[in-house]
Length: 252
Ligand code: PEP
Image 1 (spheres, rainbow, N blue to C red):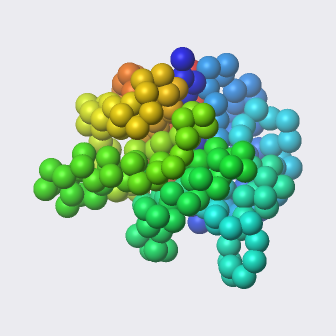
Image 2 (cartoon, rainbow, N blue to C red):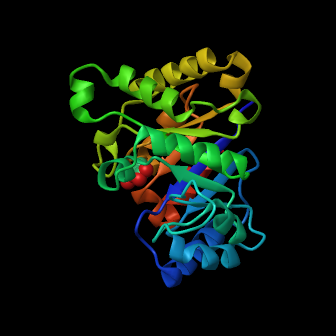
């Protein structure tokens, strides 16, 4: 039985001050996280320490938005898995389409990061998703299948259940345009069948597949009620305490 995961990707929003305010707001509106739901917030790196202090023993996981695959060294501007764990992270987003598009992330670096995260006990939230042009050309399934296969190359069955996959059609991210529940389910089902081919049915059944792309309180219920949608990776709506907690409560 897969538990829902409601994850907030704050992107380049919220320095330490605003991080503290937003988390206090979430705590006030939802002092008790519903039993059946895991909740994750991913602030910018500069705000992780503050977030960790404010979360304290509140039942919300902390994650980062990126990580490097080396332990340390001359990699200006990067952070390691060890550093993220030191400030209380248990998850890390890997391969977000914005990192692929603007920061040269490739299937190869995504794969190296997924392997490193698992090795060091951080749960990767692996992002995949097609562009609008790919969907129009009807190659979206092929593209996403390829991304999943490449990202999980050499990942062994014994730790693949710690991987979370976020299906995020690029055309739906930050655009207000959402995949229909049917489109989301179709892609999630396809991803699960790829996981089944790569591993086996039990392993595929254990992996959570989140939907991301303009998930909001008004469309969350329909998306989350799809059998293969196990939660959401939420950008814009995770920056408002009331919208984010509404989605958490819908997932309950
Ligand atoms: C995201 O950044 O992963 C995302 C899905 O953003 P939004 O919810 O704003 O579309």
